[in-house]
Image (cartoon, rainbow, N blue to C red; front, side, top):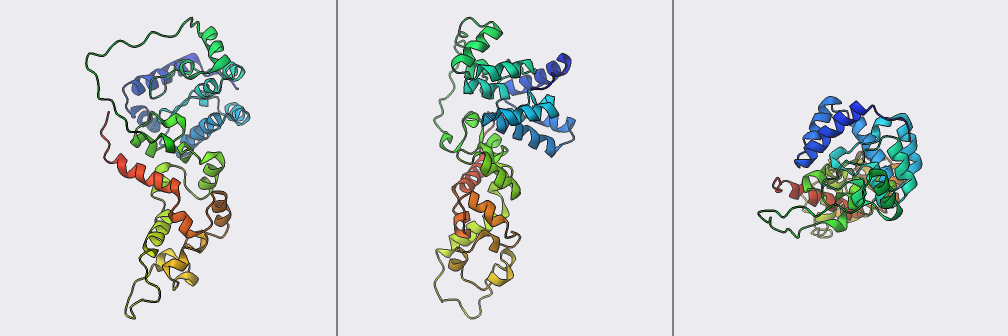
Length: 300
């Protein structure tokens, strides 16, 4: 899985990360963004690396580590490390390879879990042996004041990795965080220029399609006023501008101004064949609701 980072590099960066994550703050990302000059390409690489680990695609993980060994312990937005994913899969051989490549078994998820805590089957046994763990850790001390027990969750829309995330964190996550998108869906969206949940929520082509689809339900057939100036010319290809909203909903997405014909093939991989289907696409709706409600989330 590639070469190790120096112990000094690994210790200083990961101690900084664990410290900020334990405070429940997003400061680590701020510091790292400043260190990397806000390098979006690097952030995208880290998410791609962890997406491969999440899908248990260890071949691509190996290749990325050969080129960039310092990916071994990345946690953009507090995500699970590659070792967390290998442990959760329950594959001891992969866990061992990652440890030999410099994986830190003490790193925590947003909810404070180590790779050992999420491990299954033989991977848990192997990690216990490697880390010298003889028995489960004792339960935490009883808190002096019991916090209110929240029931709210959106787990039916999210990959397990994000079940402990806040709406604000989810809004900044890659679209692969959505349950059902998968790596192929995320790849198609990336080709269309969408990378994050916030990006999909505010994507202009979804907004166009959503508006067209919604207003088509109140359109009265052959009832346009002769003097009406109503139009959406800035959203449609020239040849489609005079058509009714109802007819437009049945057109392919490439009828929207700014989408080339090749985009229709990518939309088909997402099971979207018409503007109407794009306007009603559940994944885009989920993203929109997440981003809207994130504005009303209190910091915890």
